[in-house]
Structure formats: C-alpha cells, structure tokens
Image 1 (spheres, rainbow, N blue to C red):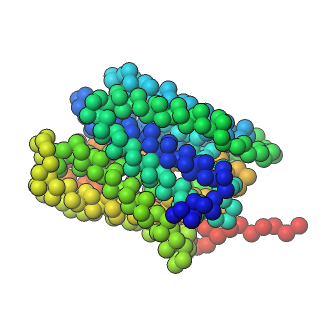
Image 2 (spheres, rainbow, N blue to C red):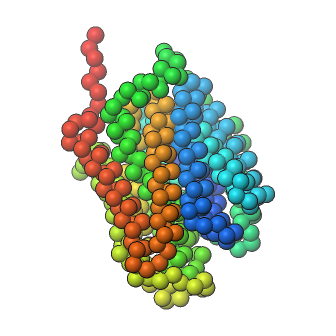
Amino acid sequence: MLRAFGGLTVPSRMLVVNQFGINLGFYLVLPFLATYMGSLGYAAATIGLVLALRNLSQQGMFLVGGSAADRIGCRPMIILGCALRIVAFGLFVVVDDLPGLIVAAVLTGLAGAFFNPAVRAYLMHEAGDRRAEVFSVFNVFGHAGALAGPLLGAALLAVDFRLVAGVACAVFTVLTVAQLFVLPARPVEPQDRGVLGSWGEVVSNRRFMLFALGGAGYFALFNQLYLVLPVEAQRVSGVAGAVSAVFVVSTLVGIAGQVRITAWCRARWSEGRSMAVGLLLMGAGFVPIGVAAPFVPTAPAGEWTSAGLLAVAPVLVGTVVFTVGMAMTSPFSLSLLPRVGSEQLAGTYYGWYYLVSAVVVAITNTAVGELLDRFPDGPGRWVPFAVLLAIGVAGGAVVAGMQRTGRLEPRPVPTP
C-alpha cells in the first residue's frame, strides 16, 4: 500500500489524501442520518426518499459538474464543491423539519456533483495507463476516511447529531482552504464543440449508455450502505451502535483488501470480467441477510446482548461479501469508463454515467424503502433483499455481455 502510494504523482497524492478528508466529513453525518430521522419520527419510506433526493441531486448534477470541469478546469470545481459542503452540513446543525432536511441533503449532493467528477477526471489524466491501480489507492484512502468518520460520528452522536454535523462542517472548511493553497491547476483542453454538442455525443454513444446501465447497479447497491444495511443491523440487534459496526466492517475490508483485490483481478481476469463478478458479489452480499431476516424478530432497543450479536452476524457477513464486490467493481469501472467514452470529454462522460445511475438509485431507494415498510418483520422480510440480489445479477450480466461481445475493447484509432 505504501509503495503504491509512493508511486503516485504529487497531485495524485494530494487528491487521494483529500479523499480521506472528504469521506471523513461525509461519513461523520450520512451513516447516522437515517437513524436520526427515525428518532424524529419519520417513516422508512420518507427517509428513503430524502436519501434518494440527496443521491439524485449529486449524481443527477454530475452532468453539470463534469461538463464544467472539462471547460473551466478540475481544480475550481473541486474547491467549489467542498465549499458548498460547508453550507450543506451547516444546515444540518440548524434544521430538523422535513423541508429543511431535504434542502440540506440536496445541497450535500450538489456539492458532491461539483467535486466528484472533477477529482476523477483529474486523476484519470494523471494516472496514464495505471488507472485501475491509482483508483485502487484512491479507494483505500476513501475507505480509511469512511472508517474514521462513523467512529468519530458515533462518539459525537452521544452528545448530539448537530455536533456531528458541525464537526463535518469544520472538516470541509479545512479541506477547502488546503485545496486553495496546495492543489496545482491542470491545463484545460480546448473543446471543439459546445456543451449540447458534447452531450449529444454521449447520448449517441450506444456502448457507453449500455455500460452506464450496467454500472448503475453498483450505485443502486452501494447506496444500501445508508439505507438497508444500517436499518436491518439496528432492527435485529436493537442497538444503534450496530450501524457503526456495519461501516467499520465494510471499511476495514476495503482498506485491507482493495489494493490486493485489484492486483489479484488484474493478474487473472480482464477489467470487464472483474467488474461483472464484482457486481454479482455485491448482490450476493444480501443473500445471508435475506435468508436470516424472516426468522429474526425486531429487537427491542437496548444494549448489546449475545442474542443481538448473533442476530447481526448475517448482516456483517453480507457486508463483507458486499464490500469485496465493491472493491472489484469500482476501480475497474472507473478505468473502463474513458475507454467506452472519451478522454477529452472525461468529465462529461463521468457526469452522464452518474446521471443514469442517479435515476436508477432514486427508483431503487424509494422502492426498497417501501418494501422495508411493507414487510417490517416476519415471513416477507426477504423480499427487499431479493430485489437487491436481482440488481447485482442484472448489472453483472450487462457488463459480462459487453465483455463477451467485445464492446469493452478500445476503439480502433483511425489511420490518416
């Protein structure tokens, strides 16, 4: 891991360290938002809708953020996005009504829409032909921030959720100042067409749109870290700390395994096959949870007990499988994206990729939230987990089909 980090360029090192801080601030708040809203009396479907709107505002606006990064540069968009997160998390400190929570969640997502495609486009250009490896290190630092965030958040939550949001606001203030003074600017490549012309190119690229549909399965499943996994962990254990346990297990697996998993897949499989198997594993992570859920009643709120530990075990086992699938899927999907898209319009293609995913996530989160409400306990509790398994199978099948038919191969370079 240290050797891989040492092999990065200076701007790449800055961005992977920056990713640690971004995830630290983000995971201070988001893992606890669902349970916080539940404590305020909101139903699971309402919570799922708020989380879906946050995701839609982020991934839906990636198109704007990505296109802006292609035209005005990645560095300004990274700084602007982090500054907007200061405002967004600051709102969580002062509001608890539904309209206020929706505005804060949407602004949180919009901020991510500004800096996320810019960070990835910046790294793509810096990485050259080592993209999968660079994004693997990037993911490790992200996992480290995702580990530290919930742990710190759980400690601060003992005081008040508003304190959690205030500390997250301070973290993004530090990041914004650091980027202003440390992150070097990259030259902006001149564009030979307008924004609408660039969007038209993306929409007419059929293999990219098919790839985006398959890759949307990753985001639909990834977002269950904020909905299904914490909700089910707390339901079966009766302990709010079970939410932190889910994130700790996920991030530890990611930190310990990400670089090794990427190297193992690189040595044995193609990038497309690695991504397809990863999506299948992400879906399979919900199998032990779905099998056990109908037989585990909702536990009363209280402290950890031996029964609670046993009940939460399928959730943690599923989280391990789910995270291994994430580690296989994420770096290879980001590496393949410029291949099925365009390096010159990297930000725009990233934007469209996340826009397609946002629509899928909005539908999935709302539907899964409805299913959680409809089957709160007992024999039907397996249904939402079966839906999530089907999403992983479908996404993996799309990518595997593209690999088999050669649609993930580089485009031939025309000869003059």
